[in-house]
Length: 242
Ligand SMILES: [Zn+2]
Image (cartoon, rainbow, N blue to C red; front, side, top):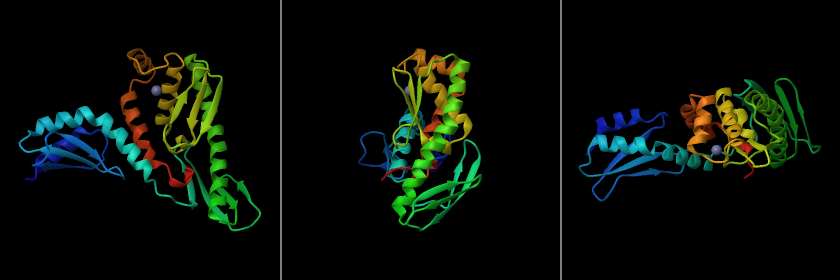
């Protein structure tokens, strides 16, 4: 029993273009969504369940599925030891990376080229990670502070983190933390994350009031929120400490 038609229409209910499979199982008691390591999604359907029920189910659980997919994909981000090039979608910058196996460690950055000197892979990677953190601060902090001023939000401090789990956060003390991986996302998505965190300076929760404020500043926030979640897969593996 292969619901081909079902598969196609289900696909259309998803905002992102992630492929996923529908499997009809005689043993299944209820509809379930499974997200496998790597981000593959499988919808398990009991026998005799109508396509529209499945469609509604997928629709309802799309935010959950997207979150899960993002998480499962970031788990298996390919661990490229030292990249040959680095591209920032945010600023449309591209740097060719040259790794010289030299014992004296260092990193030099030109307009479109980075030379990293380290005798081993781990050393080269650590230098690039430190460089990325600084590059992120230089490119993200001024943009965030500018927007904060426009929106009349108070930000005391901008901190850069390089973690796999979240794009940003906002503390009650007015520190906005931003993930260095935002550099790999397009400007509109980064701007949405800024709007999201700045809205937290007014509402420290995800209440309807909070989302109302977000929507007022960025009416297209739903699409951008999904793009942000899906954004983990565009982050190269070398960025994270293993
Ligand atoms: Zn939030």
